[in-house]
Each structure stands twice: as structure tokens, then as C-alpha cells.
Image (cartoon, rainbow, N blue to C red):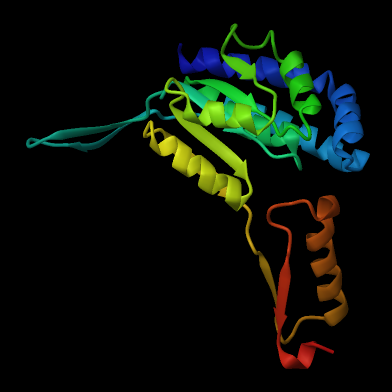
Length: 233
């Protein structure tokens, strides 16, 4: 397919989602438990991601060198089937980030949501079923066994995983058997540094906000803080 056709499909998907924000927000709040205003922000993030992909000027081919000696062309080509495995803290948004990139590039995509929060992702897939040709975007639900099957499958060309470090290690090992490409976004131990000239009250508020956003269920949430001795009291 031509990139313009893929971008047209992505624009269609964004418009469908714009008409169904409230319904998807309701599903997300009931399933995942985040406050309504954060759920709305998440769905708006999904829409913005699709709109960006639909409007961006993609350059999939670039001439690096062209002289009397040689001509070097850099090309970005589709891989085939991309498997996306997503966590439970931002179900629709994480799924969107994965399939939008994959589909815009010309791949097909299978999204495997966390078995703790599959409903909002399935709702997203149901809304978008007419935006893309049949089989281009699929949702696979189930427990860890389905995730393992997806990672090990010989016809899956790439895995994009967001989740725990322990699960990421298992995925890296399983993907090695088929030498498929793997992208891992894993949990961290994010630190905040309070500088000497910081206002203690403002710093404390910032630390709390960034540590407890989404009830603390964010991969980049602050988990530890460092400060000078003069700030500790």
C-alpha cells in the first residue's frame, strides 16, 4: 500500500475515536480505575497519535551518498507482522503507540493487552475495525501463555513490549530462537534530584505529583529522591 493510503486510514481512525471518546473513557475508568479526567487525557493522546501519523511528512527513502564513486540509498521498509504486548496502566494509549507506528510503516499488527485490562483495548479495536482493511489490526487476549505464543511464533517479525524487567528478560530469550527484532520498554528506578536552591515546599509538591500520578502506576514515576544535606529537613 501507498503511505498516503495508510495515512488516510489513520485519519479515519482518529475521527472514529473522536466520536466515541465518552464511551471508551467509561470502559477505561470502570476497568482500570483511573480518574475520569486522566482517562480522557489518555484517549485524547490516542487521537493525537493517530492524527500525527496521518499528517506527518514521512521520508522512507533518503539518498545518503551520490557521487561519481557510489550511490547509497537509505530505505525504511515494512518488516511484516509486528506483535505488541501492552501493560495494564495505560491500555488504549500503549496499544495505540504500538499499532500506529507499525501500520503507518506498512506492517500488520497484533496487540496482546494485559490480561488484567483487556476490555478497553478490545473496545478500541472494535471501534477501529472498519478503519483498516481486514487482518491489518488484530487484538489477541489471554494470559501469559498467549504472550509467549506470540513472541515465539515464526511468522511474527518483531515484538514491541512494555512491562516489567522480568517479563522483558523472558521475551528477549524467547525471541532469540527466531532472531526476531525486539523493542523493550521496561520498568526503571527513576530518581529526582532536589538542588540546593530549590524551594522545599514546591519540590515536595513536585515529588509527590510525579510519584503518585495515575496512583503511582507509571513507568517513569519517581521512586527515589536525592537532595543535599541542607534540604533534608
